[in-house]
Image (tube, rainbow, N blue to C red; front, top):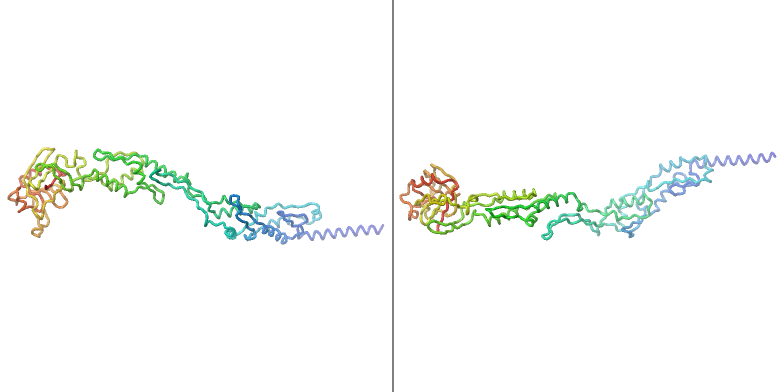
Length: 460
């Protein structure tokens, strides 16, 4: 009996000693039947468990696919993974009670942790790996942005954007990293294409198209001396363009040239003209300072402003010169007629002959220059100054009446130094180009005439 008690006590002692030894053993190790993120770490200390877990991640690989086709496989170990599980693994270890180690043989403990959440890889290593499997943009098609295009047939229209297949490396990396983090074995990269920066619904493009529509749908009509010139949609589109900021512009030079064609068609300035003279019938009068034309600089600016406003406009163009508002031609029915051949000056007022006088025009060498002019000033008295090429000297000549009509010094004035007027007097004692007039006749004309009156000087 006594021996039996001793045996039982011996067994109990062994058990107690063994249990205590187990407590000491598992005080530094994970208990049996323990898994962490699917890795068996039973009986492992923290260092051993960490090594096994990191080894498990490093042994993984991920297959890259594009549109379902396999591109290549990347080993996670080649990406220099950094697995930061030390803290969470230590927390798992500390959560186990070494005093209960014996019960772990009958109960398993699982720490369900997604290791990918604690794994980081080097982006540079990933980019190198992608290059290794041929994921390069060198041979891929870039996306193209939506743009506004123009053809003579279609006018302005939106060219739709086109999706290319060049890869956004940041997106590729994100997809692969997410796949690794989710424990997936494949990563599909067809969502990593570089998208067009500008699509057809882009607000800026839509705004520009609205501006184009407003500008090309407007009606711009120029009324020139009763004639209507309509600037149509085709013409407007040819002038239209866009600057670097995609702001609508219009071709200044092209509009300027267009206005030149209108001047060729309608303007009278700097053009010879037919004139019905009193003594010689129809004569051709050289161009002079008389006449009007479209002010191309001002009108170009005005047309651009009209087009940018996009509102229907009907108006007369900006005009410079004289004679535009005259009925019929720009001479009208009130004018001075100077007939060099007949050495006579006539003044018509409202179509009626109101004045006539013999005159003396320029002598040979200082001839009166024919042309269509207009009186631009009236002075009484005045001093004529200039250079006499015949005497090769400057002169100052007082006159009582002075009516300049061109931009070179020609004008009509009294000449009390002339003993004769008309006939051939101009051939021997002609002027330096001015119209010498008898003093008493000059006083009469001066009181009748107004600034702006056309002066038609001609020689058949």
